[in-house]
Image (cartoon, rainbow, N blue to C red; front, side, top):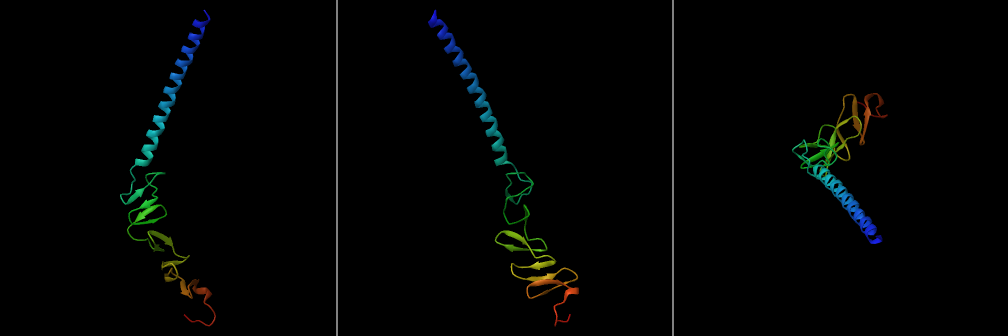
Length: 126
C-alpha cells in the first residue's frame, strides 16, 4: 500500500516537472524570437548598419553619423572626425576640430574664438 502511494507521488512530481519544463521552454523560445527580431530588425535608413534600440535610431552608419542619424556629408555647423560629425562651437557654421572658418550672421572669428560684432576685442577694427 505504501509503495503505491509513493508511486503516485513520484508520478505527480514527474508530471509537474514535465509541465513546468514545457512552460520554461516556451518562455525561452519566445524570448529568443524577440531577441532575434531586435538583432535582425531592418533599419529605416539604408545607410544604417546597426539600429538595435529602434529602426529609426542608428548606432553605426556606412558613411557618417551625427545625432544617431546617417549622413553622406556632415550637416552645416559640424565637422568630420573619423566617421562622426561633431558640432562646431556655438555660432560657427563651418569649422574643423580646431578653428571656425565661417561664422553665423553677426559674429566673427578671432584667435580661434567666435565673438558677436558688439564685442570686438580692443585694438581691432572691423
